[in-house]
Amino acid sequence: MNNIVVFGASGQLGQCIKNVVELQQLSNVIFLSEAEADILNTNGLEKLFGKYKPAYAINCAAYTAVDKAEDDAERAHQINAIGAHNLAVSCKTHGATLIHISTDFVFKGDVAHPLIETDEAKPVSIYGKTKLDGELAVAETLNDHFIIRTGWLYSEYANNFAKTMLKLGAERDELNIIADQVGTPTYAIDLATFIFTVINSESKAYGIYHYSNEGVTSWFDFARAIFDISGAKVKANPIRTDQYPTRARRPGYSVMDKSKAKQTFDIKIPYWRDSLITCIGKINNS
Image 1 (cartoon, one colour):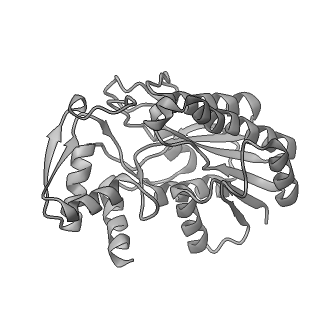
Image 2 (spheres, rainbow, N blue to C red; image 1 turned 90 degrees about the vertical axis):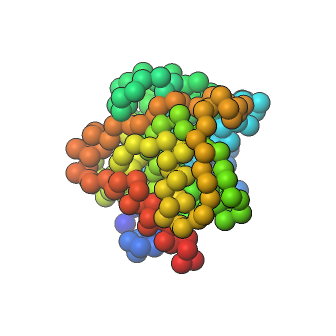
């Protein structure tokens, strides 16, 4: 079987990919953490590609500290843009297909309709800009690529909004949650499953795809669903973005249209609340 190499494998999505690989009993997937594979080290990448000869490289490595990036722009650019370019170059040299994970933060979020892949990308944060730069670098360097934009990722692994709300819901009686930012939660296990659907299809329909769970919600209603499903007795208060200032701006509306992914790969995407029930069930049973 052709090898698949996962870069940034120690992060949330990398751990979810490992879970899916174990469920599908795949033996040809190599997981490389940031410590094992520095995407800024071109000589190191050349050796790794020469060693593993992957048919596919999955790039989960990213600088994702959205607020910190505002004061650490150079580092964010190095990882999210230069690193993505380096992987694309290695893929081109060795004949591999790159699956690059991007974000809904490439959008400004000032339109109230589900965003398609060709809508204008106009990021309002350093993080979003560096991720867009990464997309452009991949597309300009390598024809054989799939860029998958996602958003609001959560799972039973690593740190994420769902796990934070479960923790705070057990500790506090009342919480204030932003209610005027709208998007779609994405269970990272579902995203990982989609990645392997793309690989197993052996499709040559390269380009950008949107993937999140189905449906639309706010952070406030997402939190309320977490409390409802988990049975947490906590009062949630809706607040505006300007009542909770952050270093980086966020898109106000980042719901993505998944029609292209559904039609190209003939998939049915789970509704966000159904996947949340699954995730919380796993957390409670762990």
